[in-house]
Image 1 (cartoon, rainbow, N blue to C red):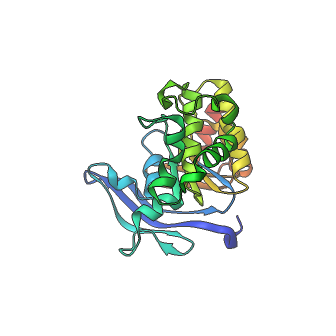
Image 2 (image 1 turned 90 degrees about the horizontal axis):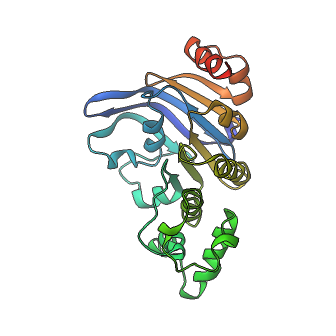
Image 3 (image 1 turned 120 degrees about the vertical axis):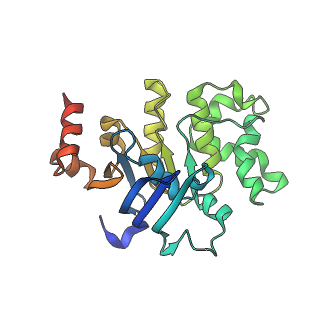
Length: 255
């Protein structure tokens, strides 16, 4: 990875849930305009690391970052002067199961943009169209923008959540197992979007799917028992893993 292109820099991060250590001195760097896949066994700290990057981790009872730094463009997001609302706009997140707000399709797309004061009254439809088109959803919903978002299929809902995140103009999008609840067709659609979106945003995705990581990611980061086991270009890590646990995981997946 070209370190000059590093956008997110994690240094010696320590995190706990109810005083139980989850992340142990984790250090990692995430390159701008690349897709990084975070992988590892269940309980290895993947989602904890992801949510520490935009401070949504602290929304969970008992979860805390105890030490280390997360820098975005050189600024530590845990500095007391950081505006957390602005941070979560800059670093958006798409969850494992898509969550539609109890409002219309259009209102879902515009929710964050309006919340942050970046939506003018006359721009509503054009803005909604722009971001729905960007995730390939416009043609499917343009005649029912006022319908409840809950009327969409789960695959459509995940794209709606992605459109809602994109409408905030983030620099980074975090994705936590975004395809685990989707059928193969919807998964393929989301993966194509990930590959396309990296030209304008940096994407960090947690996935348990080795094949998916190969398809969409440029960089791979393996966690094992809350520590970094391996990191590097995805093709290199998958072809010749050095850590024995990572080697076992990849060999098991291939068999």
